[in-house]
Image 1: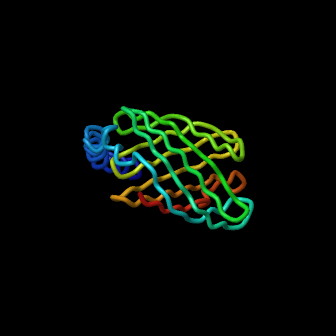
Image 2: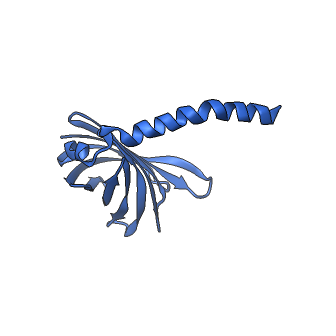
Image 3: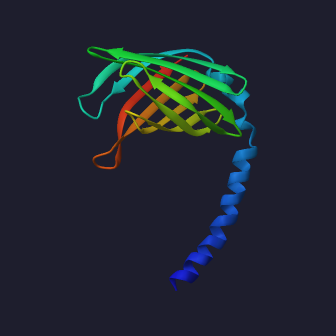
Length: 167
């Protein structure tokens, strides 16, 4: 019975998943030029809550540069007794991104990969001192950045940053 159910489910889900994948890969929303709306200076603020520590209100500024299939972001946030300075440099191809990131305040770095469209970036971040996920959602002149960190002790992702920016 279980085998028949999984075969039946696969027969229904696989064709739909294949169509969705083809639509996503061929969608014009995934062209590198569609990220051009990110170009420029963004500012705002939010909250940062490190795994080991309390919440910090921060003011932030981000600068994006789109050049062909390359996208760079420089993000600096500070508030009270907390600050960080992070950047990434990724290449976009067919709706996928891959590249590297660094955080200079805490001397961390690593790789990142994920997906991008005209209105969002979703990335997995891995490195020597930080592993997690990041999403960037843009709507007109507003942007939200949400970062979760993998807590190696519990194996769960924990929210560590929520930032709202305006262009």
